[in-house]
Length: 427
Ligand SMILES: *[C@@H]1O[C@H](CO)[C@@H](O)[C@H](O)[C@H]1NC(C)=O
Image 1 (cartoon, rainbow, N blue to C red):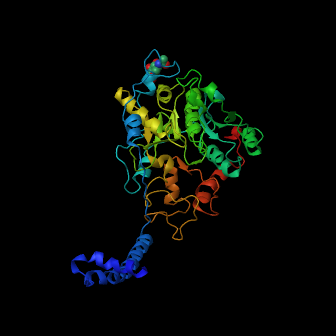
Image 2: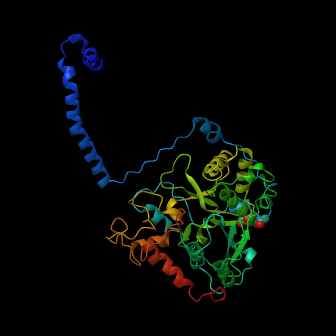
Image 3: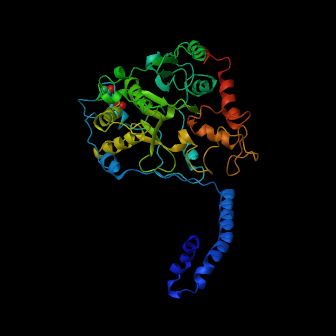
């Protein structure tokens, strides 16, 4: 019995050959395994070679066609926040939306070749700072906002670098940084130090979402309770609410500023997600600027309040929302907000050959960034950092900056020397 099952196999395969085992059948296993012996090592060798010479980057995302039909394709009607009778008296549409501007922020081409994006950033000229400018009260300054979730991690030295980067690169005479949090940070020693040192240009606030939302189309919305672990949804909401209420710039805490943002602020803007312009994920809010009571934000709240609930861990109230808003604006023939090219705030978000080096890796032994560009002080990389405005670290809070690495040499050390012995009064 045990043999019959074995013998039946060649017969059923080679039925035309009758009982004599056909050469086709009897030879096949041997040839097959013989071929495998050659093919398998070849394939392995080929894969090894590919990995030696290339770093494969693949991203496969599945978007539900139903979701695209219902959430992406429809262009939602505006609420009318730009109507003259609706616009806040603090917002001058003819000046902010239609008025002449000094700097152009958008290039019109993707700037994926070479270091084009960085060179474009260098075309943005900084206005000269007036020395001995009169004192500006805190409330009248350019407001900068950032947010720290006290339940994610304690605020320590690694987080302090963002504050140092702010006070070393921005004009402390006419700006104020508000560090928002979801719990009291007043007892933190690091933060107390900055409060003492920069009493007019630094403040701590605890977010109260329902009260910030008062008077917006989001007031009383059940969506205000949304909260997800990555701090994406609530972070996305908070930035819109605080900018609406106070106006100004939002900077994610996982950023290091490299240049004064002042020349950008004649525009209202979000940023490009990366240099690839993914169809549904082209825009990012890690750095954004809108004026107080901006009708752009009023329309954003309207879209949030009338769309489906945001999905947890999604960019429904970030990237997707900005895109919906942008499309609705142009459909209503209103000049849209601007989109900063990726490298202005996230030079990491492009190809291997033209993105900034990994901030958490030691310098390459060649001492070069890319295309033969040096990483020494006053070298090509140093100059590039002075062209762009911010370095986005993409969270990675658990990682340290390598000792003697480019971030320490070209950014951290400079922040420290700039801040050493300087207080607000002396600046
Ligand atoms: C708005 O801005 C324009 C252009 O700068 C100016 O002429 C006008 O007086 C401003 N309107 C108000 C109400 O301030």
